[in-house]
Image (tube, rainbow, N blue to C red; front, side, top):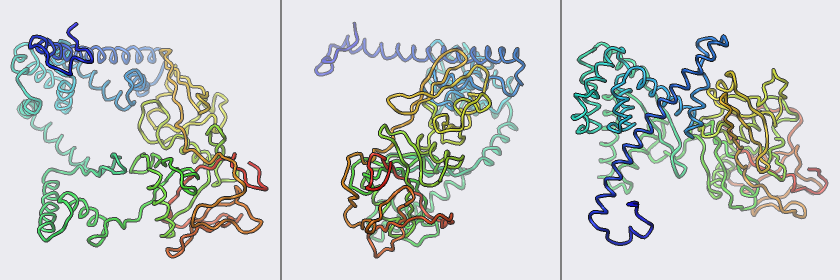
Length: 492
């Protein structure tokens, strides 16, 4: 075999062997492209067959094929959104761009470049798209295609599109301007990407002004980097803060953290559940405590107890006195940590769904509930789909059966580990007061962080039986509490 062994990379190899490795890299790349074409054809065939079956069943046209993208995503181990994008691209390859599909199938064109061919011709009529497909990927253009870089390929497609239908290109530009927006998505290390999609002239102008301000500030002796100054200036101007006050921006953070980490110096990280604009993310234990302490010092924090059993299954929350839909929604979001319960789906929870539909006798309960995104909830309503609740390693799980008979299990993530070691009475963390004599924290108590900036202790106050209105701007910091950690005179 010409494949290198584990020790072959430690020393020199013969030139002939190195040449064989290079040849094999190229052949494997061609095989990879061929595999992508085969996957695309299979996805389109599955959609066509599903639509035909549902037409026989009398399903309305707009509902046919609704769950195919979920099946494609599950088979390729990607999100349903990515499955839908691949299915749409493959449909264009197979039905409207045969030369692009042949170039991909024979390994001449990579899957990404074939996807760009679809994207850059999406605004054209099928006839104009077919002409570009033949001119660039047809037999006469394959030699030139092999020499084109990706940017030059995109420029070539755009130039041909403008020649064939300039009005369609103008309409596409107008539509793009109408889709301007600002988005935020999580980044590593508790950072986020704040992205603005704006017209080119406006974006270049905004960047130039931030860059000029950063250069002037840096020249005046500021020790921050140019990129740091630009980022701080952007936040200050958007939020209306004074220079140097970029960090003093009020924000609500929903933090799921165990009592061990929050109150007893534990080391388990917390979780920022999905559903916020910042998305989900893991928060190291010291950072979680600092976030809570900052909220306490600013008189803007509130703790909500969530009770779990020894296996880590969520049982109840102090936000409600009985199970009703708002209380279930809190628990379902906390159990899924804000992310859709479907395997490989990274979308936010939008729908509180019954695993077994309510119309089929499914109970409105925590065991029969799940948090899903809108796409996954709609997909499971297509004919042939089925679900049932089960357990995997003691955690809530949902088993999904697709119309083709394939089974996929999604397991709820493990919650933050609560205190489990029995302790005599209540042992407060350093700097915190214990409850008054003869009083112990129970489920009717919430730890209200009402202390002022000068007081470093947390006062335990029983909640009034009368429902009070939460002050606007309060952060809602949820934390786990184990019933195994029983207080004297209380019952788990």
